[in-house]
Amino acid sequence: AQSVTQLDSHVSVSEGTPVLLRCNYSSSYSPSLFWYVQHPNKGLQLLLKYTSAATLVKGINGFEAEFKKSETSFHLTKPSAHMSDAAEYFCVVSHYNAGNMLTFGGGTRLMVKP
Amino acid sequence: EPEVTQTPSHQVTQMGQEVILRCVPISNHLYFYWYRQILGQKVEFLVSFYNNEISEKSEIFDDQFSVERPDGSNFTLKIRSTKLEDSAMYFCASSEEGGGRSDTQYFGPGTRLTVL
Image 1: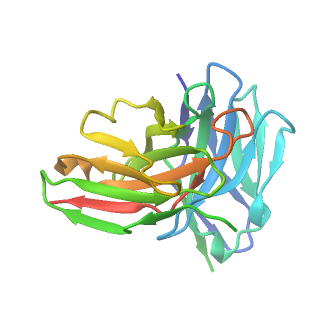
Image 2 (image 1 turned 180 degrees about the vertical axis):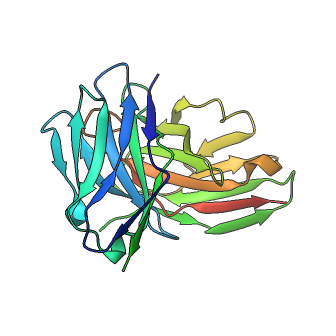
C-alpha cells in the first residue's frame, strides 16, 4: 500500500526567506510523486512532478523538490518566499498500476508574513 | 491554457435527494477521475473512468454513486440518495494517458456539496 505523510500541517515564513515543506512517502514500488498547490477558491494546480528521471525536479514559480529514495522523502523548497505563495500544498503519490489513482498527503498550509 | 471546469461551484441539498455534479475535462483527455475532500480531512480517490467504463473505484464509491460520460464533453458524478456524510468538496480531474509514470492529472476547482 502507498501512503504520504506531510510532516507539518502549517508552516509560517517571512517574505523573502526560504520555504521547506516536508513530505515522506511509503510505496511498494518506485513511485511517481507530485506536489500540487491550492489557492483559496481555486482548483488543485500542479507544481511539479517526479517520474524517475532527474531526482531534483524544478517546478513553477521557483519551487523545486528532491526525490531521496534512501530517506523516502520528497521535500518541497523555494529559496525566497513571496506573499503570493500563501496557499495549501499537497504531496501526492500515484498508483499508476491501479487506475492511476492518486494518494494525497494531509496538506500543509503555508503562511507568508510581510 | 486548457483547464477542467466544474459546475456548480456550490450545491446545497436535502438529505435523501439526488445530486449530479458536472465536470468538463480537458478536451483531448481520455481518462477521468473524481476525488473528494471532507472538511479537515485528506483528499480521497473515488473513481477513475476510461472508455465508458470504471477503471478503478475506492471503497467509498458504493452503490449510491455512479459516473457517466453522457456526451463528448461532460463527465458527471451522481449521488442517488445523499447522506449528511456526503458533504464535501468534490474534485474532478482528467489526464491524457491514464497511467504510466509520466501521466499527470489536471484538476478542476471543485464543487462544494452541502447536505442538510
